[in-house]
Length: 553
Image: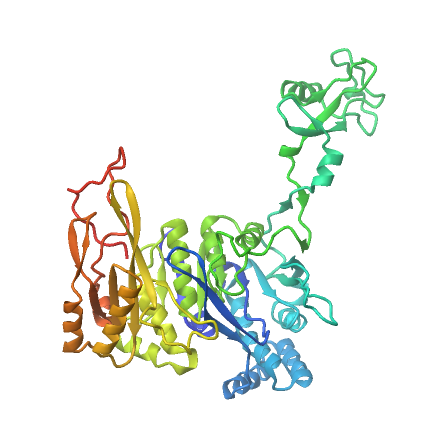
C-alpha cells in the first residue's frame, strides 16, 4: 500500500466527501456517528508513565441543535427530486419531532448518507453503528437511501453488562449495527464464532494421545450404493455401503482419522477434530466481543471507542485484502487500525483534531506508520494563515483544535485536562509531552519534555510558567510553541534557563526552546536527545562514539 491509498481528512465529512471522494470508490463503509445521546463525552488521559489520569478533555458534545443551516438543509432535502422517498421520510419525521434535537441529528445525517451511497461500489457494504436513541429513525433514512431491498440484517452487539443504577426502566446493554449493501451482488465472507465450553464437553468428549478433542461421525451411506460396498481391514460395511470410496477411506486411515471398534462386528467411524472445525456460524446476535476494559491495552481513553475485534469482524466479513475501507466519523481510528492490520486500504475523516492526533499515535505505535510518509493527513493547516484561521474558528472550538494540531507537529502526546472541562482550568504550563531514554551502566531512566502551546498574544510570563512546570515536574526540557512571534524578553528568558546535559549522548540541549508555527511548518525540529538510545547489536552496551541521529518526531 502507498500513502495515496491511506488518507486522513481533518474537517466536516460532508464537504470532504463531496470534494475528495469519487463515485463508487469504496468497498466498505463503517460509521459510528454521535448518537444524539444528549451527553458530553470526555477523554480520560494517561500520564507520562502510561497510568490512567483523573484529568479529562471534552472530546465532543453529542447534542444537536436546530440552526439556520439545519433549516436550509431540511428544505433542500424536501426539494430533493432525485430521492423522493427520502424527502417524504424527512417530512414525516418532522411531523413527529418538529425542530428538536433528534430532528436536527437526522437532518445532519441524511445528506451524508446520500454521499456515502454515491461513493460505495456496487459490490460494497455499509454498516451504521447506533444506539436505541435514534436507531428506528435512522433505519427509515437508510431504507430510503439504500432501498429496503438492500437491507441485509441488524446486528445486535452486547456492549456492556446490566446497569445497577437503572431505575423504573430496563437496562440498555446493546447497540444496533445496520448492515446494507449497494446491490444484491456484494462481498460476503462467512464468519464463525467459537463453540461454548458446554457444547465442547458434550459433543467433543474424546481426546486422542496428542490431547486433541474430537467427535465421531457415521461412515454409512444414507442410500444403497453397491459400488461403495467393500470390506476394510476385516470390518464389514453397512448394507447401504460406505459413505466414501476405498481411496478416501485409505486417506482417512493414513491421516489417523478412523476409529476402529474392538469387535470386527462394529462399524468404523470418522474422527472430526475440534481444531479443524470452523466453529458456529455467525448470527446477528453478538455477545462474544467484550467492551474495552479499563486496563485493556488497546484503550486510548477516547469516549465511545469500539473494540478492535468488532471492527475486525466487520472488515473480514465484507471486504477482501486490498479493498478500501472508509470511516467518515473516524474518532480515535479503530476502523483504520483494524483495516491496516488486515491488509486493507483506508480513508478516515474526523472534525476533531484530537481524534486525528490519537489515530496518528496508534498508527505509529502499532505499525510504525508516519504522517506524510506512509499516509496523508489532508485538511490540516499548511501556512501560518491557515493555523490562525483554525485557532479562531469559534464554531469548532478552534483554540483547542489548534492546540492538538500544534502538538502533532512535534509528535507530542496530550498531557492535561480537567475533571469538569478542558476549557475551564488553567493549564499550568503543560499541554503535551515527549519522552526519551537515558541509559547509564545498563540503567534506563525516562526523561520528560514538556510542551506548551499558545495561539494568542505571548510574553515572558508564559515562558516563566513553562520554566516553573519543568522544574516542578523535574523534566529535562520545556518546549514553547507559539503562533505569534516571541518577544525579546522571552528569548532572554529561554537563554537564562540554561541547558540539559545528556550523559547518553554526551551533549547539551537548551533547557527551554521556543518554536514558532512558522518554524515548525518550515521543518524545524525540537532539539532533544533521540527517543531511542544507541545500543551495540551484541551485549546491549552504550555506543558513545555513534553520531547522533535526528529526534524521532
